[in-house]
Amino acid sequence: MRTCDSLRIDTDTLVVQPIFENALKTHIITTHGSYTSSFSQLELLNLACMRYFSTYEGRIQASRYQTSFHRKTPLLVAENGIFAFPTMSPLNAECMWIFNHSFKSKKHSDKSTILQYDNGVEIVVNASVHTIEKQRQRMIVMIYKQKSLGRLY
Image 1 (cartoon, rainbow, N blue to C red):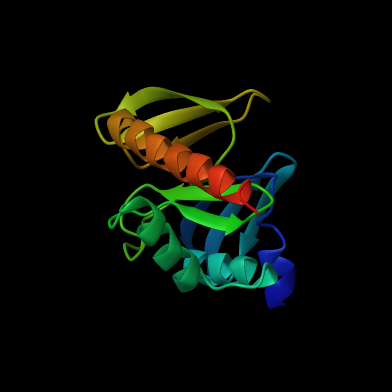
Image 2: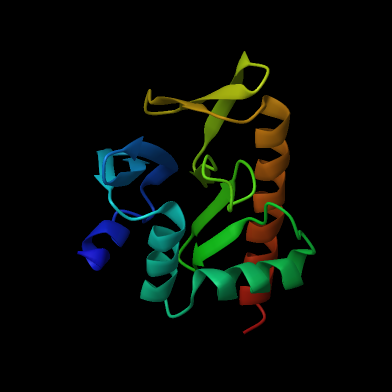
């Protein structure tokens, strides 16, 4: 069911990553476990955005407008604090999405990083420490802008 899979993307989501096993396309890692889905990452993100009355494409366009980040644009999934950033172009089949939780990044290899979360979870992602930190900073800028705009109303 589409809604069931997309409900896995919430404030507890840590990382959404591609998998290439039979009909399974996405691995969702949360603070309370791991799940798999037959839907692609972009399908799941779009369905999660639609739960909050928008679309993935609409949220990306708004993020680009507010931040001027036109490549590897961070995503505001929902105003209740669900933000994520891609490790590479979202059109790349190997793109991973990292959500706004506190983590430490440690070099795993030249092109991969280990994310260490406070709850002991460690996840290897396919991006350098430099890319992860740059993308995290871009997401923080977007979070700040979203919060500051929210105070105006």
